Image (cartoon, rainbow, N blue to C red; front, side, top):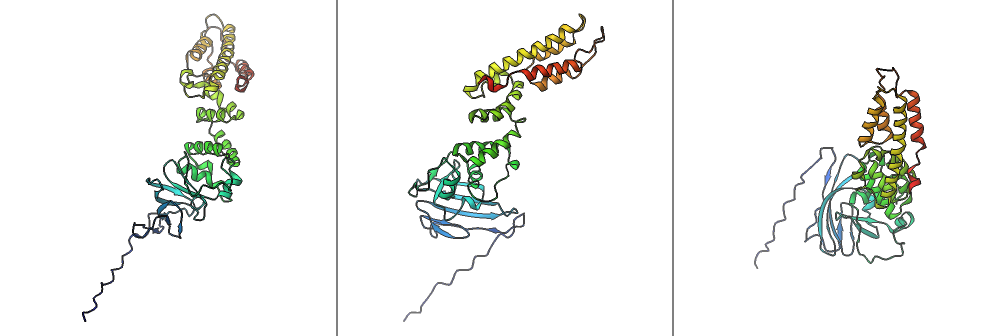
Length: 328
């Protein structure tokens, strides 16, 4: 009888890696065509079946215990493939979730229907069956990840730490999907940034009918040239804006001319300030005060054209100008 020859057992694979620069251990789950069957999701914690979807995930834990950096290779029923590096949280990668979203950058997010039903008015109720299909959304994964955390009873992202672009996208997404608690939070956050981003925040406010935010941003837009600004405003506010700007310019021009008439015939200080304002692009209160600030004395009559009384009169005139919302 021939000897029973058997293949020697394979050599054990040595573990490579160790600790990352932050000192955390790197863990990897590798899925191949031989070990991962269609319709299965592989993660370091568990394996579960999800119809029409295959996801292979490798995770590296960084120093912040609430943040995981994941590399997703997603294969949908349409056969599309994407690889991205994003910051993930357990809230959007729950293995027992019953609805799957795909972001504009092809990242899958797993969310519970009941949470959507109770916190987001724009999504269908939990009785609506997606039949295992993936729901495509137009926002990127980072925005959706921040958004969906607000439908769970957990610590939410701090909007004060977000860059403006991220906060702006989150605010628009909250309005679109009607997550009302987040809408109020984003609105308050954007109001704090209006000095640095008046045009974007004015458009956000006019799009969603936030009159109080428009009133904060409108005076700041007076420093932007009209031909440049009208190309960025929403169409329904262009005409009201032009009327508001003209009203403002007439009032300020009248105030300057009053000061010019009070000066002596040799004094050209008020006229020079008025010309600098009239010919320049900046129309805001801040720009006007800056022009008046040097406050020189007339070399002929010894008067101070822009004294305290003149400055008070200017502010009174500016305060009396109708607010932007009266032109809507």
